Length: 156
Image 1 (cartoon, one colour):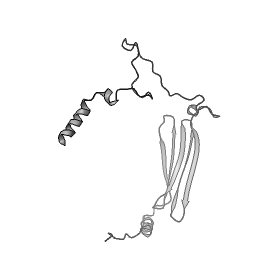
Image 2: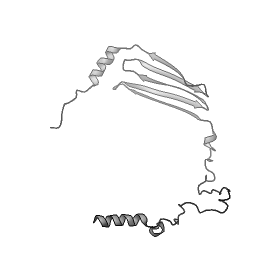
Image 3: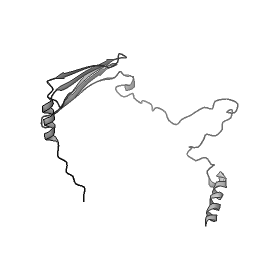
Image 4: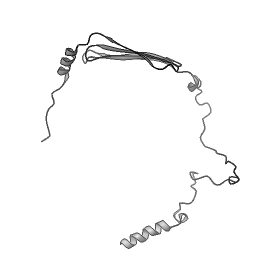
């Protein structure tokens, strides 16, 4: 049995590609391109692709969007008194100038407000502010009421 297996493997490895059908060009054209005349003389073969930008691409009513400067304005806010979540963000961009702010209610009772801006290559400029007083005791006691006691169950 082992001898038969070894002979089969040797037969496959010594078979010529044409006998297995591996040397032929596929009908779909996915193989290597055929040699062109003049390639050996140093001329560069011409490259043709089947892919190109469709006529009228990115030329809808607004024109080519990639050429227009970026311009947007967005805002969101979440305030849920039951869970204590209070956060949001606002940002505006016009060309290379971007500015905005975001805020979050912290566990110690303060509101953290971050204002930021960037214009061209000036870099990211940030101003961080806090409103309210930090109340460490309230933050610690508030957390204890929201934490569930774990059950020690090992499925036995």
